[in-house]
Length: 579
Image (cartoon, rainbow, N blue to C red):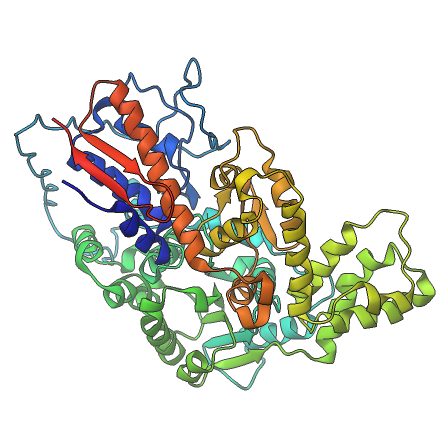
């Protein structure tokens, strides 16, 4: 039996399903009964394995697991000695979700019986019934816990994004005041939904994070959509609604009482579509008098970067926002941010609109942001004029200002910059700033000893960063470039510091504007990157990891599958069934 797995995996990479490949490979291995006792080692061998999320944090064990003892996929064991030479991706401080013991696999030739159905509840009752005066409150607390276990909770990831995006002091003052006036009813426009729009790189997420911090006691819920996220459901509208519902359980004391019965909730979660989920957990409870929320206590829901929501749900999201704008209770306000998208904005009728423009106020804010990094190298008399020139070079984008700030931070402490030198030392406009950063990085890589990938390292690294939809460990580039274990990934990625976001040893491009720029040859010119190269490399690495996994299993006496990865242009993977 022959098959080409490479093209299949490459296709999944092109659809940005990299973090699903682990699951597919595991199903493949299970179907041919290769794994046996060592099957649970997958989590140690695949970096971007999909792990459960506990309180918004990916729960995983990426340390090598001893193949001699079967264990839970997410349990942690300390091997007596390393079991492999390939780079290990060990995460510190991971949150481990308690796991129940998995049922043993059925013997060969015997079909596995389907899981037993959940026992039916003795009596279906609505949760919105008024409790008796002498009713014990403990069952209500238990019911809340049961319901929250059925929902999603992205609080950890959202908090990490919120803390990472800090608004600089005394910037966006007018915009924040305008949003505050709308939220507190001091505007003539009484729309329940408001939208902040602007180009990529204007700082909309920083504004949204600051609004969440300033109105912490009034927050009913918040969510940050993100192009590259450790949670695979972060941009899935259905999952987002369930995460908001999890937050509602803690914010509104009577929220649980507005929900249908527990059995009905399970049925909706199992079979309901996005509209059913929204009606059950958002619209019906928040408009239900049983919620008992006073009109004089305003609440705010913040949804950042809705343009990054999965596109298959975009029409559903627009419909939900329209419904809230027309029918939300007086005390509820919804604030969203999005990139300038005429098609999307045209569908949001009668919402309160705030636009972030490249105005004089915007330039003043950028000057405040650049004052400290430029002030280290320029005298006070010339500083204001130098800041004006440098702020204009950003094109009004805070992303460009941040890149220039990091460039200034790399200068030696004894550097001096005269005002007349600003035009010569710094490029003008976002595109030219990107060209300088990526061209310099390409030159740095060409001067390193990177073996056979010396000339292609730039394309390999950037194409992978463009394809991923979750942060990857820095050591991933060691495997991608075929370098020896122990090579310094920090030195390889140092040139990308102005455009990379790093957290707990994992990296990704900091803004979608960088991704859009890199894929356009007419703009990026020699710095442009082909997405297909990254898809090829990701698929190739997945097969190499699978080959290593099968080699380990073969040493245990199981030899059901043989994989050959051919070199050169024909990189297909051939499988053959063994006796």
